[in-house]
Length: 234
Ligand SMILES: [Zn+2]
Image (cartoon, rainbow, N blue to C red; front, side, top):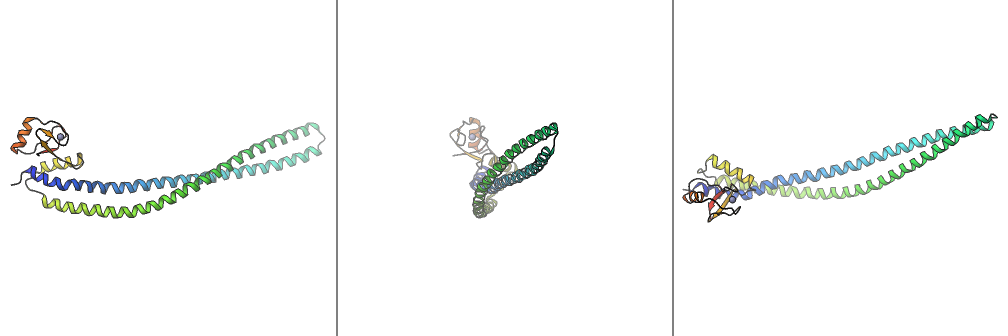
């Protein structure tokens, strides 16, 4: 008759690989999502830069429009100042013309800056888009490989599950099984530990003599007090 510890050790032989297959089945889609999100974020950067260019071009158009208006006003003031005899009015015209010319100069400088900013953004977009296109191609290749890996991991997983059902022993109580399953999760797929002398071979801590005796007598399930793993005699 198989003891619970022997039954658990038989399960552990399968569950070590099953845990790895399950981890793979979680890791691969997570990796795919991470890479997909990264590409989306970078596309958003490109889109944002394009929007910035549009808004800069709009500002440049506004400046050009304003300068045309100012130019028309200057020509009108020129005519007026030539036909005027009142020196005070002439002075006022000249004053306004100087002020408008200064505004035009300033606006032109600003407009030039916007044009330069837009050009820098264009260059950046081109660079980003090229990288993005290359990384999209790499992502497609990754997706193809991922499909293969996922299918393989799923196959291994299903195979191990079938094996596990075969090996499942009715000597294991639901409590023991649930303790064991918790440990598989908590201890990265290794729920069991060998006891050599009175040293746990998973965490290398000493186990109290009374537990060593209990294990030797085969009295139920004995856990390592330090790492909680279920002990078996090496
Ligand atoms: Zn231990």
